[in-house]
Amino acid sequence: MAKHAGGRPRERRVDTVIAAAVRAVIGEAGYAGLTVDAVAAMAGVSKAAIYRRYTTKQEMTFAVLLPDLDERTPGDTGSLTGDLRALTEQIAAQIVGPGPDNLTGLLADIRADPALRARFATTYLTVERGIIGTVLDRAIARGELASRPDPALVHALLLGPLIAWLVVLDEFPARATELAHLVGEIAGGALTARLLPVETWS
Image 1 (tube, rainbow, N blue to C red):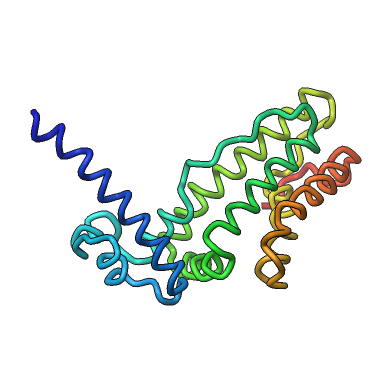
Image 2: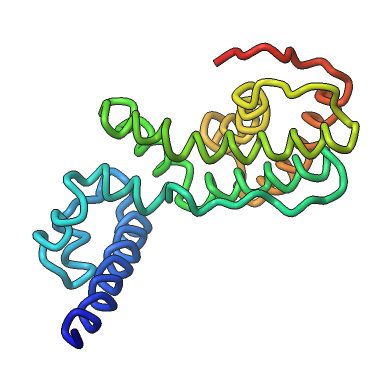
C-alpha cells in the first residue's frame, strides 16, 4: 500500500520533467532539433521511460505543446465582443507560447500522421470549438445573436489573422495581444451584424 502510494508521485514527477525537457530542448534547438535522445538527456530519464508514455516524438510533443483539455472558457465579460477579445487573446498565447515556428513544425507532423490528426480533431479542436460554442450561446442568451453561427467558421475568423501575423508574415509576437483584441472587435462586429451564415461549413 505504501509502495503504491509512493509510486504515483514519482510517475507524475517523470511526466513533469519530460514536459519541461521538451520545452527546454525546443527552446535551445527548435522543433527540428527535438529528439527523444535529447529530451531523455535533458530530463535525466531513460528513453524507455519516454516510450512508455509516448510512441513517437510527435506524440510526445503534441502532449506537451497542445494539452488536450487544459483550456478553459474565458469568464463572461458581459458582451460578445468582450468574450471574443478574451478568447482570441488565449489563442494568441497558444501560438506565441511554444513559438510559431515550432508550432508550425508540429502541425505539419500532425497532418502527416493519421492517428495524431484524428487526435487533434477529436481533442484539441473539439475543446476549442466547444469554448467558442459557449461564447456564442452566451451571446444568444443576452439577445446579441438570434442564432448560432458555425463555431468552425468563427474559429477560422479568430485564428486566421494571428496565424498570418505570427507564422506567414513572421511579425512581432509582442503585438499578438494587441492584434487579438482587434480581431475580437472585428469578429464581434461581424457576428452582431449577422454577416456570418448559420449553416455548417465544416
